[in-house]
Amino acid sequence: MTVARPPDGSTDLPTVERSDEPTGPPPPTRPLSRNRSYNILWTGQLLSELAFEIAMVAVPLLILAHTGSAIQMGVASSVLAAVRMLAAVPAGAIADRWNRRTVMLVCQGLRAVGMGSLAAALALDRYAYWHLLAVVVLEGVLGSVFEPAEHAALPQVVPESQLSTAVARNAARPYVATLLGPSVAGFLFSVHPTDPFTVTAAMLALSAGALTLLRLPRAPRPDTTEADSGMGGEMAAGFRWVLRNRVLRTTLLWMMGTNLVFNALLVIVLALSHEDHTAPGEIGLMMACLGAGGLLGAALAPWLHRKLSAPVLVLGFAWLAAVATVLMAAVSGGVPLGVLLGLAALFAPVANTTVMTHQLLVTPDGLRGRVSSISALCSSGAGALGPLVGGVLAARPGGGTDAVLACGGALALIAVATTASPVLRRFPTSSAQPHE
Image (cartoon, rainbow, N blue to C red; front, side, top):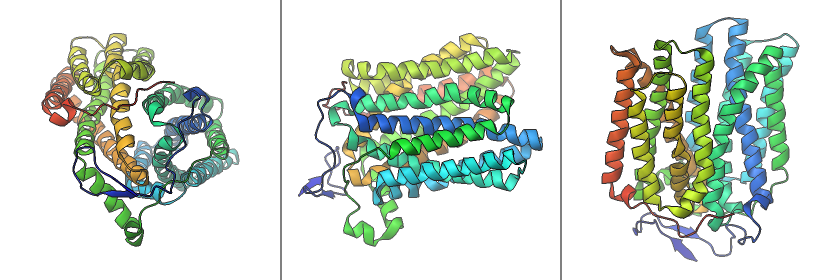
């Protein structure tokens, strides 16, 4: 019997790991690209994220087509954001309490049924707003439950030496989905309003089908004390683990601040483009540059992890984002602004890979779902508040330029705090070198 301790050397919240319960497969000799279980996980989550992006563009289009009500559209978006945040923390406890493969299968299957029911209602010309809201709630809850289960399952199928490479490849998925999803949704909706929801249901069904082929080793369940305390006690144990771990606590605060400013910046950039009378097509190309920068960063992440230490990657992202944002105030909207957005996004997957790999390595398997869900809660909270902050800043006298400078100043302060922080300045570098 061994006791796992936090990486900062403290003895807070020791977690018992039983040596007779396997926590992962033996390190394979095959390259990551031939790791069957990892490829199933990656494909299943890509289909899930792509389906979500298609649905989230198709839902407001459907509301506008039937009622033209901006209020109904806003209510649907707010309901989705609210249920995703409310479901985030219990979702992690579910991922740690029950079989993760089963959790993912049930989530994808029910999401497919929900989207399929909406497609069937549209095909029968029986659209109802309450039905749409019910599907949105189902999508929000089940999506929140699926994500920590998938994230916590990653170290069960990938050896430690390949974990940072796997995390980097996972970081590319949202950018792929963001690049493809909205355009696919718009095209499908123009053909027939039913088609986006039919395709979304089919993607989720394919994701569930792929997960039936997944085999996960048995993971440790919550210990007897946690299990006796119920779901609430298990969620509290996850929060205690994060709060008592200095590195995780600091990086979550750092990620929240950065995400908040970036989400505000995106709203401000769109407002600035409108002020400059940028054509819609050029705005689309500008936002595509953001996705391209993220994709390039995800592709470079494994190589950069081999060449540079973790503190350099974390500090480099903080300062590069600050400099790129300040420069945005000096260029016009459109492609030049998009290039700087892509530059700011370039190191984001690299920094996220550094942070998430460390999180997975130091967190006991029985707590990984909860720690992942707490991280998602912090990110979604910052993502919900950021656009509101951006809208307020853009509406102030001086317009978008002053607001961009405000974001640049906020990111510069974050970069200074990052440099001054002993935790981030000496961020732990994994001893395992990423490779195929």
